[in-house]
Image (cartoon, rainbow, N blue to C red; front, top):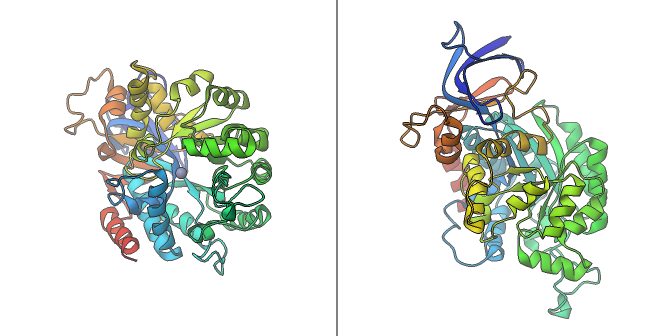
Length: 462
Ligand SMILES: [Zn+2]
């Protein structure tokens, strides 16, 4: 059955915004689009404000939502924060993980996010033994996204080692292959070897039948996976036409250890091992060198920036302008969910460049909006999502222009107002796969505040 939506204004790409746009939706696709319809046609749903393609959250660890407000005031480094994060991970089982992920994904829906890339490495029991269903945790994530009403790319993550052996320290902990053994906290992340990972993921692929869920792959990092296994995962993604994501160069120490072991940077090691890489997205690339950037551009790889997490963890500011200038496609993610606000991530890409380069206007608002929408959809394997056009996935969000943040918006530049002044609280409606998920700032199926409170409290207390 077809549905009709009338958008007071809609962003169809480029710098301009169209008025009076009618979107016809058939099944999970936009079947027709008409501009210049100045009042809502009979039988249409009226969307006041600016309608944009649904936002794409290209990098998420759903369980980090339980850390919000509990770790951000702490001193220390990325590595001391990681110890706190591991303690939360240890308390999760398939049931409480499902509830936490469903509430977190529902929070994303309220923020206008239509697709999430979940970088998933909580595979097994805390001791490292598989659950009776070896994909119990992954299946919990799949069910959570379906019940929250958003699209999911489950990036099933290979994690084998406890880190790169610093070599300069205690010889008693040094291993001959250059990697440290897994710590007890990391035991549940590992399948033991890449063949076991591939066997388990094949079972997950067979078990997933939803049209709004895709299974992709991830390599945790060069700290956790050696080049031979990176190559095996990359070959698996090519056989399955699936996206491949890898954390890379988030911290200077990671670069130093990787160079000490391999004589090459994380980007060089990943590109050398992965081969053809147009399906590859590197996450962070904060400390990528100019040479790394040139290699990424040549390989056709993309990067996912997570500025609110990168500033929270004192990672640094990545070379966004250099990457984009070289032709590397950029998308964004909320990663640790210090905030869930893709508009904030997109404007932070520009504002962090202003801070570090002393120049304004590095990226146009349409470029930032593209990072927040179609670029993220593409990085997650949904090539026909993130745009408002006939034939595209019927995923779109509406941002009100009436709040205290946006009242008085220049009618000629609503996209700039949304990118630079709106927050996730200004999203009023969300449609995913033709189904309405959020109406008037309210999720149609999930009591988001109550479920978040219960799910976070349960994990924090255990
Ligand atoms: Zn991450």
